[in-house]
Length: 392
Ligand code: NAD
Image 1 (cartoon, rainbow, N blue to C red):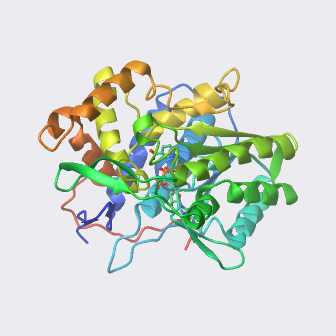
Image 2 (tube, rainbow, N blue to C red):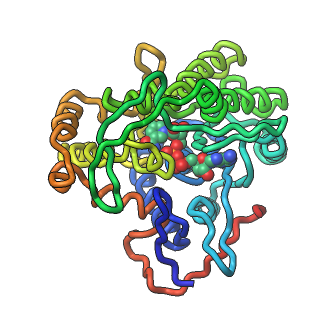
């Protein structure tokens, strides 16, 4: 099959297997080129196939030499259609890891379910004994609870509606958008999906099965961002879920033996999930422009390598006064944010090209699905069915 991108709204419904493989290899090569980290040795990554979770898995494996067990929710290709990018990323990661003598296994299914938790624990007990790190990197639109109730998360404000600029990336136009407030029920549901309840369930299940070291580290990811995104993010329905996630980190650290739980506040980056948030993609494309000009722009892999090497497993864990690890340190620097807000004030359809890095945004977006990778022949006939050992 000749695989070309098919964009529908803010997702791409096709993915390129060899392109994904090339991009995973670039990330591995980046970590290989950096100093090693004296870090964890047996790492469970929940949400391991894309974005920050995939970059965490690569950093754990290639910087720390860790065995990694990944939980993904993806699909292989078939004769008729391509698989998901997450599937191809995982197939590629496992191939490289095994060739490099690293243990890597993957469990495919709904991370919120008991069935997948049981499968993961069984695999840990059989292969690893106990894990010494758990990365929780899910970004999901819905969660099916144990009793069958389906909770959906929404990306809305709370309290009042909010109007600000947004971008139509396809047509490259800037217009105003008004985001309506979420209802109390929508907020509760968003917290169920993206808050800390499931993270805590994982830690409790691992402890009950004696499948986690008593002094293990666990980390989940959050975002704060500048004020202009606060009504939409930090103070919005997703922000409520992230506040719950932060409380869960405190609870895990206080109540789960010696396990230390951290929130890492990461940089705003183009991923499948951030593309869906109104206002944020316009902010990201301005941020890219400013940070690239300052020479301190990072992608997921640079962020996650730095998280492992400098912040979590350096001489001591680096946190702010509220106990959070700040990987958004460079994004939030005063001069960066001053330039971003000046550009935000001036941005319009007419000034888009000079105020924002739209090409950079699109390039990263295509690369999420394996397109625009260097050295890949996109006119070649691709085998879109790629095996992952032991995974269906
Ligand atoms: P992403 O969409 O790239 O990755 C999410 C991962 O979760 C994917 O591998 C996906 O397959 C997996 N997943 C989703 N539902 C699942 C399920 N039910 N079972 C198993 N796996 C499932 O997202 P991302 O941007 O890397 O987000 C990861 C975390 O980082 C989220 O908590 C997000 O809020 C946070 N974060 C993101 C940004 C950003 O700008 N992208 C910034 C700061 C923090």
